[in-house]
Structures are given as C-alpha cells and as structure tokens.
Image (cartoon, rainbow, N blue to C red; front, side, top):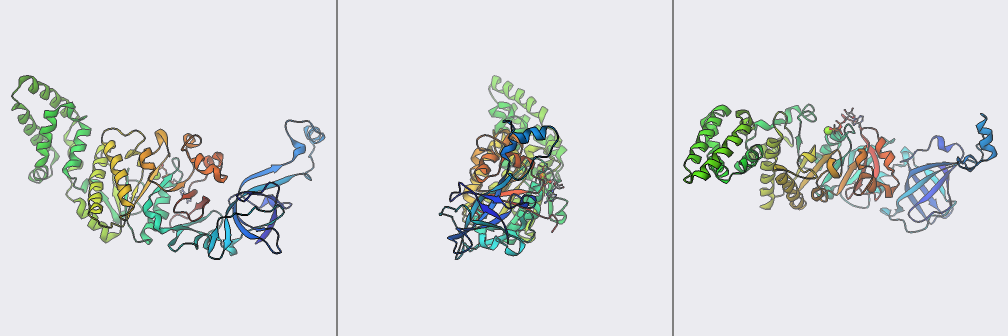
Length: 483
Ligand SMILES: Nc1ncnc2c1ncn2[C@@H]1O[C@H](COP(=O)(O)OP(=O)(O)OP(=O)(O)O)[C@@H](O)[C@H]1O
Ligand SMILES: [Mg+2]
C-alpha cells in the first residue's frame, strides 16, 4: 500500500477527490482501487475502499478563456511553470471495511484524509466478496491485477445476464472463456446457441451439434412454415391444410427417408387435393391463389432444416452427459433457427412447469435476432418465449445469458425481455447507446464512468454491474482467453 495523496475539498459520504502527491499523476490510473484512512492515519473513523475515476488536471493559470502572463509566455513558445498544477481523481466509495466484508459508507470523508493505492499484495477482492456466503471467483480479473479475480454472487445466476458491446468488443469471448466457465463451475449445464456457427463451434468441437440434426416439434414447424409463406398467404383454408399435413409430419419424414424433395412433392399434392375439396367456388379460388403464392416461397430446400431426427429430449440427455453443448446454427435460414429455439424453449418451459429444477445456462448470442426491439413474424413468439423462460427460470435453475451489440433501440434487445436481465457486462459500446434513456452511459455515468470511456474500451474489457456483482459499484474486468 502506497500513499498517493490526500482527500480534497467538497468530499461527501458518497464521493471525494484525491489530490495526488507530486508526480503521482504519472503512475496512478483510473479504475485502480484505493483505501482512505478517513480522518487521518492515527485513529481513523473508518477505512473506505473506493475506485478511482474521472481524473482531472488543473492549472488555472493556463485557462484557455482568460488572458494571463503564463498564457502569453506559452504563446511565444515558452514552457509555463507546473508549480500550480493540481491532479486529482474522484474516489467512488465501494464500502467501508467492516468485521465481515464491506458496509456502505455513511460518514463524511474528511478532507485531508490520506489515500493509499492498493497493490497486488492487498488483494481487496476477498473484502468485497466476503459479506455473503455464495461467492464464486470469475476467470477474469480487475484490469491491471491478474491475481484479483472478480467475485460474483452465485445465487443470482438465475436472475439472468446481459452482455453488451459493439462488434468486436469481445462479447463472444467473454461468454466462452468467462461466463460458460462460471456456470459450469457452479453446477449448471451450459447450452450455447451459436447463431452463425463460427463463434463457439471451433472451440467446442466435440461438443457441437448441428441444428440440422435436431427434430422440431410440429408447432415449431408450423411457425416456421407460416413465417416462410407469409402466414400461408393470409388464407385460412390453406393454413388448415398445412396444419392437417403437419399431423403426419414425422411419419412422412420417415416414409420419404428424410428426402426433402420427396416430402415436398407429397406435401404439395396433399395440400392441393385438400383445397380442391372445398365446396364453395369463390373460397376455392381464393385458396388456390394463396397456394400458388405460398409455394412460390416454399422450396424443397426450405424443408431441409426440418429433417433432423435427434429429438430435443435426446439433445437434453446429451447435454446431461457432456455438461456443455454448442448448437451450430449455421447454414439454415433465420426462421428455422428461430423455430428450433421455440422447440427448445417449449421443452425447457415444460420441464420447469412440471416443477423440475433444470440447472441450465442458456447462452444466446446475437440475442436481438430472437427478441428484437420490434419483433416481427416468428420473432413475436420467440420474444414471448424468452420472457416466459426468464420469469419461470428464476425459480427453476435456468440462466439466460443474452448477448447483444446494443442495449436499447434498434440495435438492442426487446425492452420487455431486457427488464428480466439483472446483471450486465458492458464493453465498448455502440455510439447509439452512448446517450439517452436506457443506454449504457445512463447505467454507468452515476458511477463516474463517462460515455467517452465506454466508446473507447479495448476488446475484452467489461464493466460488471448489477445484482451478481457484490460491489455496489460497477468494476472494470478483463480476462486472458484460453486459460
Ligand atoms: N480478453 C481479451 N484479450 C485480448 N483480446 C481479446 C479479448 N477478448 C476479445 N479479444 C479480441 O477481440 C476480438 C473479437 O472478440 P469477439 O468475437 O468476442 O467479439 P464480439 O463482441 O462477439 O463481436 P461480434 O459482435 O462481431 O460477434 C477477438 O477476436 C480477439 O482478438
Ligand atoms: Mg460475437
């Protein structure tokens, strides 16, 4: 522990500024943790642990909007004196050192109190963690201190997690190397949905299963066909005919040897003959038109992702054995990805509804594909499904980890779903999230993290904020991939 400065004027119980000793500005950085001996080294009132943010360098003689001799000197190429320079950081208190861990600070931090920089030997993470029982240390550390592993409260894993950051900010890596490991170590089965099949599949090769191998339930197939045919051309008779055909779907798949071309022809002729049996001529004509429209969009290839024969139940059994599984969702259309999600979601929901504790973490990368700001078509159902899973999951051992480039608005996650996420990992943000209501900046600015900083974070740097974070103040963490 090293003395770096003293508390300056205007300190309160929730914030203070440390005025740095000479030359300390060269080594003290924001996001470092400090200890304030509140009231002085002898007989301090308490010891406040805080994080440094909002650094400031002042030299009033160099004010750019008034004219002073120093400015004149500078103007002609001279180097003005630094004697009147003041460097300071804001200290955001995390808590007061107490018998078992940290307590909220309630006393005013006294100006003049000495401020110490915590170094690797005084690992404060234990202090931050110790007040509650169920703590787990992440495979991630406070930036700059590799042995300060960041603690999280295990009991809130099922209160769901959001990971946010613009493209390339390291979200998928955080999910791979830090979060899936956390869930695994805390006894959860981890099921990762790899939207494009490129982010996780290479790392979890043997634990990958392709979406095309999985058998969908008929209601998910129905949603898929409805999505592809634009709600069956808006025709009820056609919808009924499809629905009737779906009753024999799995048998037909077997009979045709899972050949989409054969199945397609069979489906087409069965549906067509059903429509031909309509009595009223005008109804029949309408249905024929809808039929032509629908089959213009529906191709034999469109049925390919519906030929799988691994049932969702078998998938979950395999998850039981392997503990971690990645679904490679590459190579099929968005609608079939989403219909798979519906099938998976309904099975998980069914199990939980029957009272089962499913101990599963479902990592959903590219979450706005499932639950966008304004859901359309099948997304209306997937959004609703995520909302329902989130609500029931809290009591039944389901964690949802939703990964998204943006928090709100067009690039973000549906607001109703977002309300169910209680822990946030926020990396480098998209400029659209930098300001305004509900954006990342609004979340972090009260803690002294500026929007500009969020726009510039390096890949793999995330603020952890929310219920799982035992520190009331968001902390900046990073991790070494591949560990
Ligand atoms: N902890 C880290 N340390 C060093 N580099 C990292 C770290 N995390 C991520 N990166 C770098 O950032 C790159 C992008 O990471 P990643 O693919 O996880 O981004 P992403 O946020 O998921 O992007 P997208 O939104 O496009 O999917 C990685 O290829 C890697 O080079
Ligand atoms: Mg990614």
